[in-house]
Amino acid sequence: MKQPKPWWQQAGYRVGIALVLLILLGGAVSAVYLTQIPPQQPIAFPHNRHVGLGAPCAYCHPGTAWGPSAGLPGIDKCWGCHQQVQKKSPELEKLAAYVANNEPIPCVPVAIQPDFVHFNHQPHVSAGIACETCHGDMTKMTVAEPQPRQNMGWCLSCHQKMAPEQWTKLSDCATCHY
Image (cartoon, rainbow, N blue to C red; front, side):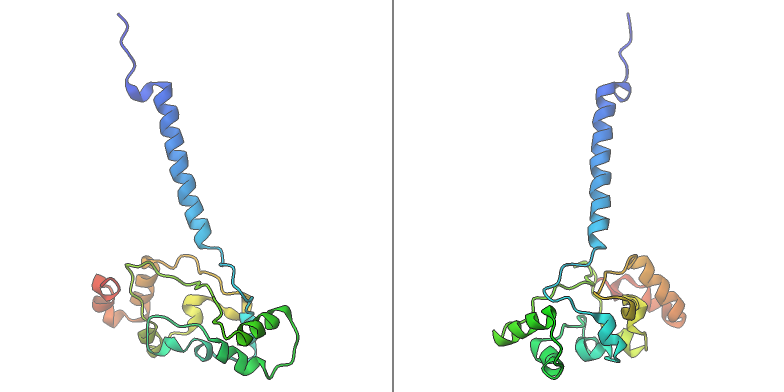
């Protein structure tokens, strides 16, 4: 009498397992890819032009001085400068429309941390860490882009390198996960 093959050697099971693994791998690759694409913004804001003209990051993002969110500039901040600048462009016309309707610009945040991570800009700014250390060189970016490899290992590596004397506190899970 012939012995039946074990289940893992049967073609149907192998094909099924291969399909499940392929679907899981495809989902993981898609998730990573989609988190690296800059989101579509209502106004294409040229960071490179503004930073190149000398606008400090904190002028438009004042939340860095006191809290977790850098904040986004409101229409008053943008229009405060751009009502003086008489250049015509489709993007400035969009800004003018938001101002005329007294509507906030529905910008989409780019640097988003997971809900289980509590990040605060203030201690980093107080320590003198430049914005481009984490957010990249904005003089080379037309639109803000998510920075690859911004993960826990990256943060811990920076903490260990920049503040070795505070490593015990900065490597404690409760520092960022509370």
